[in-house]
Image (cartoon, rainbow, N blue to C red; front, side):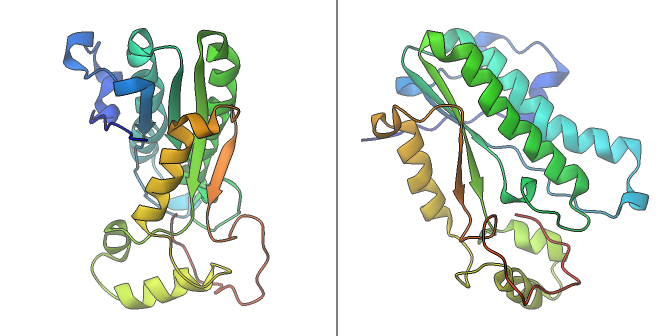
Length: 208
């Protein structure tokens, strides 16, 4: 089975009425939507502009991207929304980020309820700590090895998930193998969301 890729800058869709001719139709009804402003701050550090920017990227962009693609989605179709295990845990300084991801996972449920009569399944794919360049952004290029070690300590199986592992999970949700999977969340998090550890570093303020 194969999954075609769709490249759209979803974070900009809310700013203007994007002509449908500018969007590449999802191939074989398979669409994966991922938008990520991973900003983490303490509550007192947030201002309205930064909060709006994060929500526009992480929530508003994907919402209106799905709306724009709706006329192009065939029957059957699979829409995969990238969530995060952060929506399930109370990680310090993740308030805005985690809230945006929790809202996306809610969309997977509510849009499935709305769209399943049209043959459109919507599911959430929630990664745990992932080995990506975003780690460098979080660390500001400094102490990246220490940050990676601290993040790894949060994961019960003791390592970060790879993009390839996430891709395999996305292929499952996009394929007919998951035709009975509707409006739910697939956690690919190494146990972070469901298993309790006793050695969690208290100073961690990182993202998944």
